Length: 401
Image (cartoon, one colour):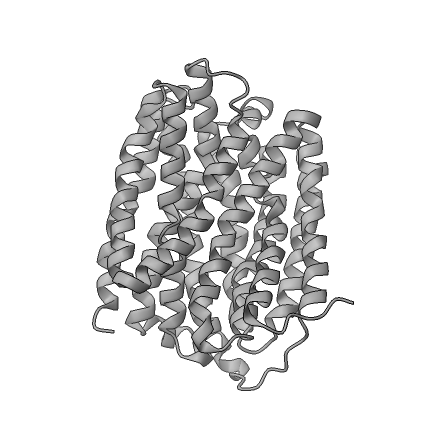
């Protein structure tokens, strides 16, 4: 008989697996962007808006429900989020037939992720002692990359073998599996030190905590670049693949999934580095390295495809190396009774950047020549990375802690 995990590592593994499978809907659109460019006659800006709709749902719903986890068990919200993700995946697979009809279903899928990602982190940290939280947070946040990668791989490979319609249908199974995992691996938690309802949506204590806000503003820069990059990386690799006449066995969906998957060890190792040399120093170092890749990768499209893949993989490694460090810094800087509210602000502002990033990137791509222009891709990646210049300045707020 299955037993509820009684130790921190077991619980962390269970929550990580649940989050990964709940994210099966993540790449329903970005993994098929090259196809939808033609099938739905989309521009770069249109593609940016469809990607943004997902993160608009995340940004709008996530902070509200995350704040509520200071009053309501996060387990309940996670389960509701899985159901929403299921509805969004089903609707996108069977009812989306163009730009406008795709938007509401991607919004619902994003709202589902908003109810699972940060509430899932709260579900985990509520059940762990303070001393065991940093590494658990690192593994959990790294699973965002793993879930994204598996979603890219799932959609891409099913599309390759069975067609795009079945690729979209395949994403429907993930959220119900996550529900089963949560029901078997966790028990309801009796909330003890509850904040009054009148204070649940009072974010003033978070906004005035300069230590948490420093990390949160850095997270805005990080997520802007990360989401924009993942929204368009597969389409960029497809362009380079065709431009260089690369062999067919070098499948761009598998390559993108591998590049995204590398974010798992990168995020965990980045957190370990921050524990050794200091959180602010390690985050700043990662952002500077990402700046180099964002200013160069788009202009490599005409080079040998192996080199382009290597650049994309390295970019995929570095872009997540500061993710868990930033989130752990924001959570660790918050009082215990304000962690839900802190995660809410962290989520709202961070993925607000993630919502805007793909739209700006799509506009730049269109204005600079479109998806068929190397100059367009180069300038688009620069627009993604330039925002990271602000990250180190935001981290100055966290000094002297």
